[in-house]
Amino acid sequence: MTIRTAIIGFGTGGRFFHAPLLAAEPRFTVSAIVTGDPARAAAASGYAGADILPDAEAVFARDDLDLVVITSPHATHAPLARRAVAAGIAVVVDKPLGISSTEARSVVEEAEAAGVPLTVFHNRRWDGDFLTLRDTLASGELGEVRQFESAFEKWAPHLAARWKDVATPGQGGGILFDLGPHLIDQALLLFGDVVGVHAELDRRRAGAVADDDVFLSLTHASGVRSRLWMNATSPADRPRFRVVGSRAVFTSHGLDPQEPHAKAGLRPLDPGFGVHDDGRTALLSAPGTERAVPLLPGEHLAFYRMLGDALTEGGPLPVDPREAVRGLEIIEAARGRG
Image 1 (tube, one colour):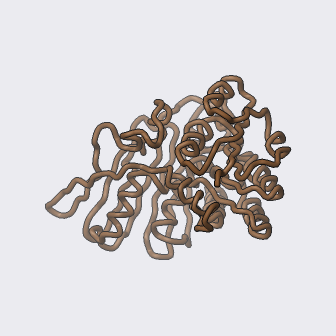
Image 2 (cartoon, rainbow, N blue to C red; image 1 turned 90 degrees about the vertical axis):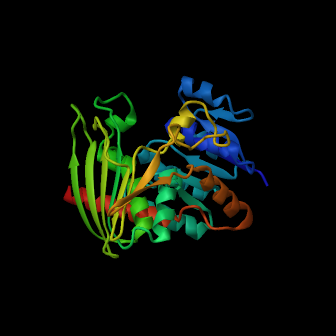
Image 3 (spheres, helix red, strand yellow; image 1 turned 45 degrees about the vertical axis):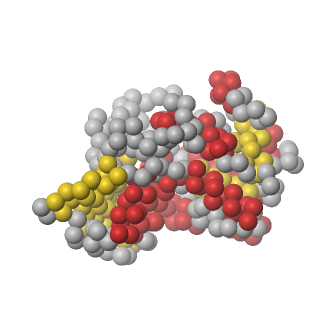
C-alpha cells in the first residue's frame, strides 16, 4: 500500500522535517504540497510527482489522499485537522495540536468517533540525546531520579518578519507554544503525570507580543521535579539535559543535529544523519568517577515508520493525541500562573 500524502505548509516544518522523512519511508509518497510562497514552491518542486497547491481548500477538494500532514501556523492546526477528520483522511498535526486543550480535545474526540487515525508530531521523542537518556534511565545507573532539567535555548535577539514573532499567545504565538509541547512531552513520557505547575514567562525582545523566555517547574506525581527552560535570547546555553539521581548525574550538551543536517542538505538515510559531527558524548558522573556515554543517533524517521505500521497493519500510533492534550493543559496552567 502506498500512503498518498499532502503536506499543508512548507516552512521549516514541512520542508526540513516532514517532506524528507516521508520521502525516506517507502510506504509514503508526497502527492501534494500546499504553499503560497514562490520560493517555497520552488523548493517543493524537488519532490517529483507532488502537486504544488495554493491553499488547503485544494487539498480537501481531492479524493485521492490517504494522509494529510498539517504544519501551518499554530492557530490553523485544529481547524484543518477537523477538516481532515470530516473528510475521513488520516492526519498528522505538528505541535501544538491546538491553541487550547478544549479545542484539541474536541478534535481528538471527533477523530475517535469517526475512526480516523490522528496523531501529533512530537518528533523530539526520537532525538538522539533523549534516546540515550531513556536507555541510561532504564539501566538503573542513576538510581532514584530526583531532578530532571531540560533546556532548549537559542540566540535570536531580534524579532523577524514571520508569524511566530508577530502572533500573540491567543493566536498560538510565543516560545511556550513553540517549544513547550516538546519539553513537556519528554518530561511526561519519562516521569508520568504532573500535579503541580510553576511558571515564569517573560518578553525580553523589543516589541515582543508573546513570551520568548520561559521557565517551568513541574512536580510529577512520582515525586520527580522537572525544570524546563526555553529561551530565544540566550547568548550561551545550559546543558540540554541534566538529570540528578541518587547514584549519579547524567549531563548532555547541544541540540539534536537532525534539523541542521536537513537544512544542510542531508537526508534521513544518508550516512551520519542524526549523529553529532564533533563526536560529543553525554557524561555520567558519580562520586569519584566520570564516564562518557556515547550518544545514540537521532531518528525522527521512526515516527513515520510507526505511522506506516499503524496505517497499513493496525499498529499503535506513534503518539497518542490525548498525551498532546495533556501537554496543552499544562501550558494553560503555566499561562494562568505566569
